[in-house]
Amino acid sequence: MFETRRLRSRVFLQILLTILVVPFALPLVAMVRGSFAGSGWGNYRTVLSLPLLPGFFVNSALLAAAVIVIVLICTMTAAYGFSKLHVRGKEIYFWALLATLTLPEVVLLAPLFATVTKIGAYNTLWAVILPVAALQVPFTTLLARNFVDGISDQMLEAARVDGANAARTFWHILLPLTRPIMAAVVVLVFINAWNDFLLPLLFLQTPDRQTVTLVPSFFVGQYNNDQTKVLAAAVITGLPIVLAYICLQRFFERGLAAGALK
Image (cartoon, rainbow, N blue to C red; front, side, top):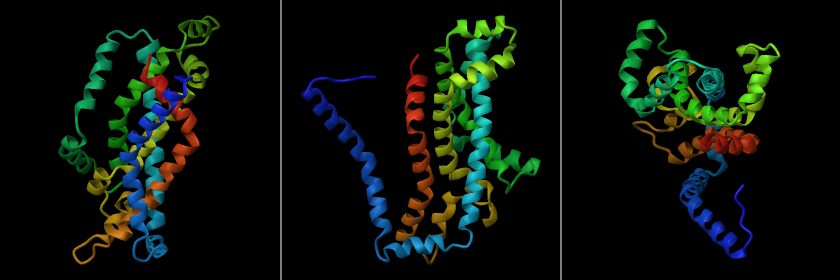
């Protein structure tokens, strides 16, 4: 951990961090203040009174949970294979996986829409779950592989000497040691899955299938544009993300730092 002993250095770092945080904090402060304009708490009561709001939260929770499970399974097995297993040409596969990071989500909309409609998954959560999970795997695999690289090979070899195969070594040795990076992956994937707007807007048409990111659109229309209700809805939908980060902050920061550096 980087530490400074002199008071001048600590003051300088505190000022620097404050300056870096301000551009990100000001929009959040403006959003919260704007949500209380006009009717005050009445804006939140109006949003919470939407009959479909509980269903939106349930859909978002199911979507995020499914994406997290899929991404964790794919990420940890891929990181184990790329880092510790002897697979011919694995570096080629790894860099091919990373090459997908260059593809923006909007470029994939046309082929995704054609695929989803052809297999009959339109207006189902799976039409959003699978693409969102696939878009997360390359980056999370990069983080997890760097973390797994830091695990001693001698520990895994000792497990093999004791008779453990690759699957048992992965389950009983590797996974317990990778909890920090798994927590970081959970937080990152949860944020991206919960906040995803474009794919639910495109693939989920009926209100009973839509997610919380589409709630603000209920207050914007041809004859209605109540920005205070939009901001209140944005605050409500963002609370689960804040709570998830607070609960996993320690593991998230440790795992993200370890995953970013070898």
